Image (cartoon, rainbow, N blue to C red; front, top):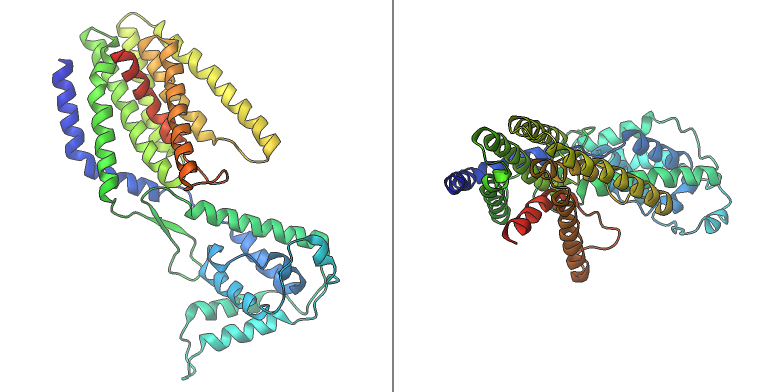
Length: 387
């Protein structure tokens, strides 16, 4: 029975892998996109109002803004300020006296208007003309001075703009991010057809997880309990594969897929244990998840306090509920849950180290750890099953 059901599920995974891969690319396209329109607007306003801020923040590039109009405004500002040397230290900025007598708003407006109007007098570039209207709407009467507080505020907004840009664009997978064609449109993701290599990886992952599901469920031997356990493993398998690819694309945990998959996996695990008259199995899953959840969050909190950045996202911690808890609850073994975590961590560390040695990433490069936590349980089970 195990062999026949495994072959059937493997064949099913092979047949539907292409559709699954495209569906995942759509799910990736629907994940959040980071941008802050208010910070971008206030950043441009502050520089136009106090041109002396530009030497401290001028290294920001127009592509890092989320809206086409704001990109055009920043390009115009950089063009008008091209003769002013950037500073890399606040003390050097102080030497400028906190004031530059430049009517930057008027200069930028003239440039944008000139470049948006054609020889015939008609508007030829609507984005530049919208940028002209945007600058004209800002309340900047004349150049004003700025103090250290203004510089740090501009630097903070510039950092937000850059961080949001990196969050939108630094991906490892097949999803593509493009900006809206509308002048004031916000960024969105557009799903693209997966590459052949991605289709191959999706096919292998689905065949492996679904093919192993009947054997993982064999912790229960009776018909009904085994069937319920199989449903639990299938829910966990599909969630693990789909969430892994989306996380690889976007650095985000696909919350709807995670909650549905993990919820069903736990529900079927509970039903399997009850139907078999062995509810005590579930305690292994609970006692694995709760301590690990606390340890991960406390460790991440301390790391954030020391380094100023998060070591792992909250989504990685949430994955433990399914990928470590469900295997432990099905088997009644605390060790299988712990081995699932260890296997996932070792896979992630190995891949990160390999890419680090090859020079593909640095210590500051975002790295999706979710996929390795999501596949750790299948490697832990294979290790247990064959040894």
